Image (tube, rainbow, N blue to C red; front, top):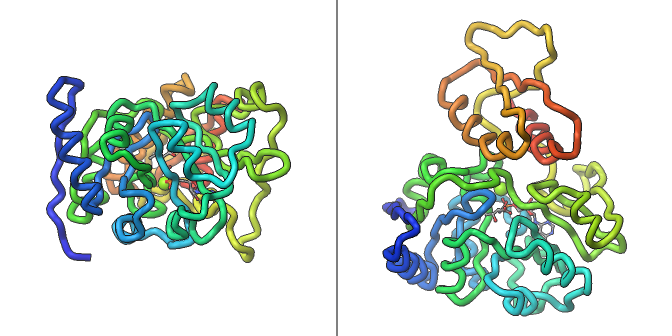
Length: 313
Ligand code: TXA
Ligand code: MG
C-alpha cells in the first residue's frame, strides 16, 4: 500500500456541508476510500459494486477477504436492486427500522461482486439514518460498501479521531461529523434461514425485531474448523491492544491496571463504550478490567462486544 495523505473535512450541519459531500462523492466515484459517520460507528466507504474500490477497503483495514461487507443504501429501491428476491418480512423490518441501525442479510443479485460477499451467495444491506451517510450515498447514487473504519479486529471508531488513529495514510478522506450516536454496530439479521437468525446483537434489540416478525433464532457458537457464516461475529474482535478481562468483585486491581466502569444507563454505556476503551488503551496499562453490569437484554450488545474484545492478549 502506498502512503496517501488522509484529509479531514469537518461537517457541522450548515449549508456548506453540501460542498464537502460533493467532494467526498467525487473521491468515491474515482474509486477512492472515504470514512464517514453513521448513527452506529464510523464506516469506511467505497463504491460497493466496484471490485477495484472494494478491494482497497480490505487492504486498508487488513481484513480477511472471506469476511463480507455491508452495502449501505439510501432508498428501498436501491436495496431491492441488490437481491435476488425480497421477502415480505424484509418490507416489515424496513418499514419499522429503516433508515436505522439494522442490517438485513438476503440472497444476493448476480451483479453484486463476490468480493463484497466474501465469496458467499448472500449480501448484507443497511439504510443508515445519519444525515451525512444518507447525503453521501445519495450524492454517489449507488450503494457504498462500508465496514467499521478501524484496522481489522481492533476497536471500532465512534469519533473521527479514532479513524485517524487507525487509518491515517491509508485512506483518502475522513468526513468528521462528530461522535456517533449509538456507539455500537448495527444489529445484523439473516433472512435467508427458515427462521430468521440474529447474527450480531446491536442497537435494535431482539425483542423489538420479534415484535415485528415473530420468533427469531440466535446463531450457534460457531465451529472454528468450519467455513464461517459471518466471520466478524466470532472469536476475538473489537479488541484494544491492552489485555482486557472480566473483573470479579473482590479481585485486587493492580497498580498499572484500571477498572472499566460503564454508565448505568445502557444507551449511554453503548454510546461511550468504544471511546472509553480507546482512551484506556492509550494509557499503556498492564490490564483493563471490566466491571460487571446487568445480565438483561438491554445490555446484550455491549456484553457481546466485550466478550469478544476480552479474548485478547
Ligand atoms: O453499524 C454497522 O453495521 C457499521 C456501519 C459502518 O454501518 N458497519 C459494520 O460493518 O459494522 P463491519 O464490516 O465492521 O461488520 C459487518 C458484519 C461482519 O461481522 C460481517 O461478517 C457481517 O456483518 N456480514 C456482512 N455481510 C454478511 C453476509 N452476507 N452474511 C453474514 N454476515 C455478514
Ligand atoms: Mg467491524
